[in-house]
Amino acid sequence: MATRSTIAMEQPDGRVMCVYAHWDGYLENNGRILQENYQDRAKVLALMLLGSISSLREEIGQAHDFDARYEDSDPRAAWTVAYGRDRGEKDTDANVFKDFAEYVDNHQYEEYEYIYRLDGLWYVSQYSGEYTTLTEAFATITEEA
Image (cartoon, rainbow, N blue to C red):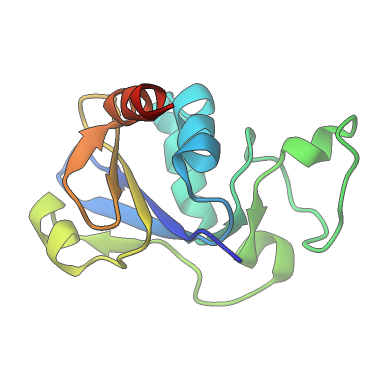
């Protein structure tokens, strides 16, 4: 079963771009990958430009066979799997909202919603709750363990 999420990015002009991510949206996977590997605005924008994705990975990578399974030793195992680029699906582009308020009111609600804000931090809303920084969300996991 999938743990669905959305990944969004606030733009300097206030617009918010948002894509769907089908697999492994929970904090320990997509949250960790975003926090550790997507801290550069240009890389986050490149992720948004892929459109909706099946699996988030450490690298954006290049076009590859959507259904291929790569050994961990193969560099392609670290490439994000995108519906448009890798499977040829249409209408997978990021949704764009005029500002953060419109995004919060109208976006695609999923179990986990990640957004890269203008302050350069990742935030997450879990099950449509309040947005907290990923750092704060990870601290909560540690406290519960």
